[in-house]
Length: 207
Ligand SMILES: C[S@@+](CC[C@H](N)C(=O)[O-])C[C@H]1O[C@@H](n2cnc3c(N)ncnc32)[C@H](O)[C@@H]1O
Image: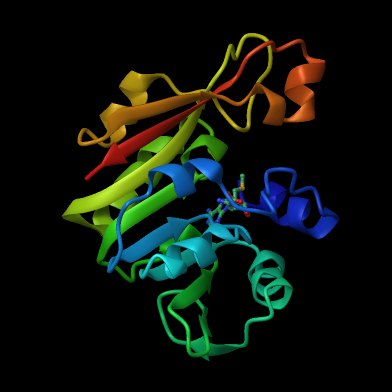
């Protein structure tokens, strides 16, 4: 279950990484002063953007290659911190990353949650467990921004997996469908090669 992700990082197969961050996060996130949980964060620069908005940011990532690359590529010093997983705290900053299996991370609570490429990266049978575990780390009124994708999964299989609305609101009933963006031009090459003609990114918000 975890090994394919470890191998992807070892082999540099990280096509999902967005060097300038996620446009939908930047367009739709509206909270500051929060403690933000970013599960399965990879080395996303969204962590920096969320910190710039005045939040404390905590990422959790399986691959140590990704965690170390985040600090190195952004020229950030870090020090070790204790936690339910090995932790890396950015010196003098409001960013920390924890390295290991997200399902073993228990250092809540958080009053905000950002999910891009986490829920939709997981096989269907794992998604309910992911959502329950995330909810266990969030306050009841936590802000959430969750990004999903929608496409014809009969043409091509994930990841990223296509999620119907009912599944998303089944996991987190407070989420509301906030924006739908044609993201076909950024679709993984395997989707376009398989003949997929359209893929939408959907932004879900709970506030
Ligand atoms: C599709 S990538 C998205 C990364 C990041 N959210 C982004 O937007 O760039 C999914 C990430 O989840 C990580 N991952 C997968 N399973 C995990 C687990 N059980 N615990 C922690 N991280 C996990 C992978 O290593 C990978 O970096």
